[in-house]
Length: 249
Image (cartoon, rainbow, N blue to C red; front, side, top):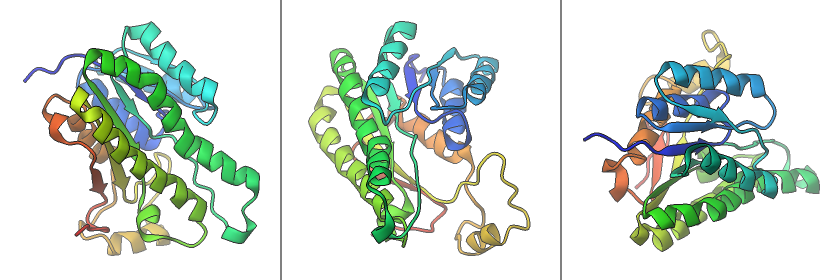
């Protein structure tokens, strides 16, 4: 089935997983809004890459942890392409440290970027999706939020909050044609990381039932499906993309 062209905003999409998502949504024929908070050159590179794939896109810089920036991302997307149909909340910060030593400012930054940002984007984008009767929102949690790890308590709180937001939005806006899901990724090395010979990655490989680590296309392909017409009956779900490291039920 030929998919209609939609417009997708992907936060934190200048590198790594976000870049891979941009590629897959471009291959699906969608307009892509590439976002970053500081590295404009990386974002411009992704635009050139998606142009080569035959898709249109723009760069929209901004920190989703600032309410006005988040709202501007939505406004610019609609100004450029006439609609905003897909919001992928990939941007996140993951500082680690002992729970008792976390500064109030660090706590607030994590909550603003990881949790408030997606809330502000949803509140800005949903009226447009509701008007069209179609929309897709995808959040990200993580294995540390499900299992609990020392030094990641405040990150876990923010990611658990997104899981709650996912379920609430799925119930409230699903009947209107807007789905909301959340992805829990496993280990995905960064674009510029050398994993061969790395003790850390060798250990992670040993513990992965699939015998490999993640590639951006693993997540990008799932998101392309969720954002397709065929993905409209998947709503309010946490999707594990980790090779089997974490299994539910």
